[in-house]
Image (cartoon, rainbow, N blue to C red):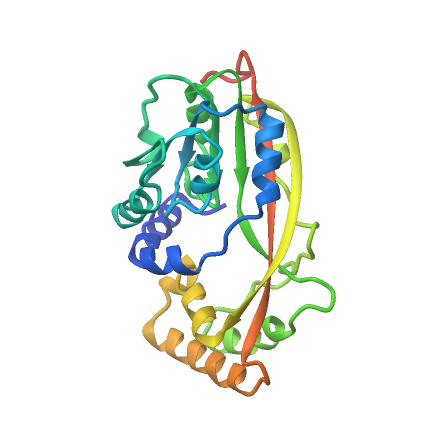
Length: 271
């Protein structure tokens, strides 16, 4: 969990990489959206609210399924690209902070893809509860790096450069395997606003050239706030090492944990 000031600082960084974010961040598996629809009992035409749509990677698959979606996105650059990507669908993209969102018509589902961690933990569950109709659902997931058995050793090998530039992993950091990512079931239930949390895990792999991988890293907050000399050293070493490979590429494992929780009729803590 980030301290409040650090969370606010980092969440502002993504907008400066909006075009790269749209171009290089991987799509989520279709199975995830099928499970979300089934677990939340959604029907075409239902109204949904998305928290932090970015450029619309998670919005588009649901818009294509016939849902009406309102997106609340903090970054104006990200929001502009989302409007471009979602033109012609029943989607409204609103610039603003979810913490200050005032819902109108209750929605069937509030969902957030790789954005929930950036929302104030003291208010986010209450805000989602308020926006939902009785019996509605909250759906949360994010992309994470996973390390399958027999996966690409590049990521462990490059840690010496991260250590050199002062950005190494903390001692004892996990290297999760596919299907073994931690979930947030306990946190969701402890909020007092949701129950019956269903959890599903997904894994996939994407191959990147050196320039593609560098562009991907350039959409992560930790790399966006690096000093120029740190990025130059790291990215230069990535180019050098991948150039020595026969296929000159790196294979990155991705994982996601989907949580779908039903809104409590009466919140255990005051909303």
